Image (cartoon, rainbow, N blue to C red; front, side, top):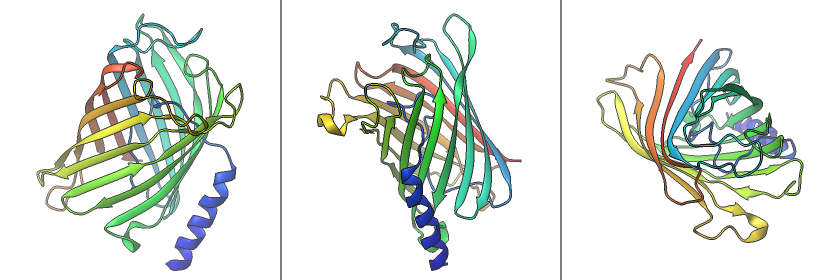
Length: 264
């Protein structure tokens, strides 16, 4: 098992020299990652969706999808390549406030984890992403991201942080890393669901010493997740929540989200 962990982290370290996808608070993937991955040899599917009830009503650049009234859906098929590696593909779609649907781009990623049974109650991992998106989503088409997974979980309490570092692969900010951490706290009610909070943020570029407080993006969610009930797992994974933007720079003021996942 020790050699397996060393191999997993060696491959993950190598991935630090390959691309992944980054946004200032990715509006499609409002999810805090833990160490749960698709079982080895199996396929899975996650559907991410969110709707911005109230948000920024003007584009920040020509051609941007205006956040207010936007409905986003991300399709995420996954494959368990090993007990410590999950491969995934993200496909972005959206419907504008005018009711116009469109395709937003794709991203490929690998999620490497230390097998949780060897480190319980703590867990660790890293996710590397490479993606291409349309101008409606980002001014720069190619981006990369690295998301670290650090957490603690017992039968009642869950605490996770995802320190995220990402940068564009082209344009005036090419290879200028930004810090976009997210975190989650949840308590299992022992009734088949947990209640908790999630926080997503974009603090700005390391080279600029981060943005001022008013220019940072912070999005805070109250969430519910399905969990085991008397040792019986739920038929599918479900995460739902309502979020509030805490600064004027945040793209959404009020937003609702749902993530549904299951093994195929």
